[in-house]
Length: 328
Ligand code: PMP
Image (tube, rainbow, N blue to C red):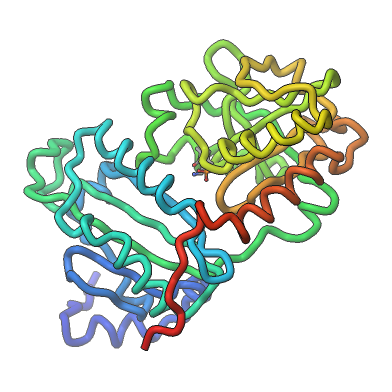
């Protein structure tokens, strides 16, 4: 085959020829490789010899800017630092300005409702598994436009299946690394089964977590139960929802809130099942493995928590990082 040689001169001409509809929401990206930012999606690339690409050697975070302020930025950055530490990944010097870079990217993106993805990678350095090949870690940050899941998900509830994909063992599950293959296969499994979400079970058969969401279950006795964070990612949304649920306990709308081991059979008997995560907030499950959950409709706890979380995201000044939209 006579392969065309692509050069620096003709690369972007070649790239620009193709229509890439999936890039429509890509707004801005920073890379420590360039020490700067780009807004052209064709330039939003990482080097193939970064161990992030060929080994998944990196950690990441995803946070949201809602109506112009970033929700829970410090919690997300804290978890990112913890994940990096857990895999002995040094933070690159540019990480010192991460907050300023995120704000500058959002302003460049010009979008008040967006998703910010921060990746710390092992960095370029050859192609083996040896992390010491890479002289310096890198940071990549991108901002994309946020789209809420379809309204029907919130109004009618979603369908959930139990996944057959082996879940990550606790060490790996608690680190938000760029190794998401089990999570990817879980999502594929859900969609192939005509469902929207899947949840994994731990080695002992207790509920673990979804592809990118935590799960919690309201028992018929009025106890809100969440699988412990020793075996799942410590979800920032789930943690906050649990704090908000405490107010419902005080108001006697809920009996109690607790971390728990939840067998699948008990989850089937729940009056409500909820999925929680940064990109969905909180979603009611209407069907679980084909069986209706409770009445098969979003329940009253979902409604109450959803109102509380929504208010928190918009109004809780302690958890919001404002952006100076009037800056020149
Ligand atoms: N579990 C996994 C595996 C995830 O990827 C996510 C998304 N970060 C969550 C749970 C939910 O976490 P958070 O509420 O922090 O988005």
